[in-house]
Image (cartoon, rainbow, N blue to C red; front, side, top):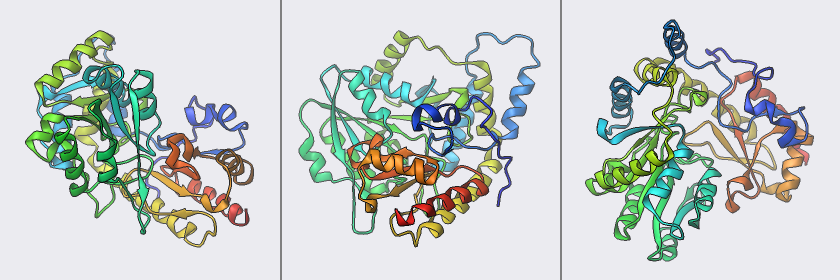
Length: 387
């Protein structure tokens, strides 16, 4: 199944390897935590960067309209959503964009809704910017599908609630929110004058029959009420280029965001990142398709391996390359569970509690690795069957 060049990153400065001792107390773990891939960035991207390096000056540049146009065409093709160039601006990362948008569109002391569990910076960006965090618990239904509770969510709102942070598709639970779910959420926000900041960085890694729907595409009203965060980092394994984009159709919201962005003065990014983004969105379609095929193969392998496991429950994610493992049957506390995985399985995973209170008893595993590495990890998980 492996058609990619998978890279041994243990001898590099890769975060997932360098931080093993600090995070897990030992370097003798297979690190499958941080959300990047152990496979080569697309060759077309690497070639374009090499070509740019033939020019002797690497100086200040702005991102070309052609780069934004390439992303606009990609989103229209893959997600049936037509963005305008004037809506878009550069950001070094989705997390930076979240912080900038929070400061631009709310005041200190305002309330921000965050669904729990979720990617940890959603919580920290709210609290570190002196906003009040409102946690909305996502709960599994009888089929193990996570859902939000619109009645409970409505009851949590107050006149001080100004923003909702949406993770779509969702990390770590792997949900692709349905059109109906997004319409319900969007209507609730419109009725209560709550702006939506939607992190859609995982939108290109979605498995059939599911399909990502940008929340801004649902209506003219939601278009004007949404800030959408996008980028090639997850799709093309380009996190090290530190480039993403922010789409804000509303002129009023965009002006507020731009004022804060200018205050931060993070500029327009680096020339090699501009080249990489443009090339990925222009020439990366075939690579992207092969990636999805490989990830679907790995996703199926996890389900097959864990289907008979007495202590670990697994439901295939609808999106992302992250497996959300339900380990509550072990009956352990979260610290004990983390140490158990390190010592008994030799695996360095992300503990579920780091994603919020609702993540207690879970572990997150990154399966964007070679089939051989995944098989090794699955064999190591079998050691836990009698834990």
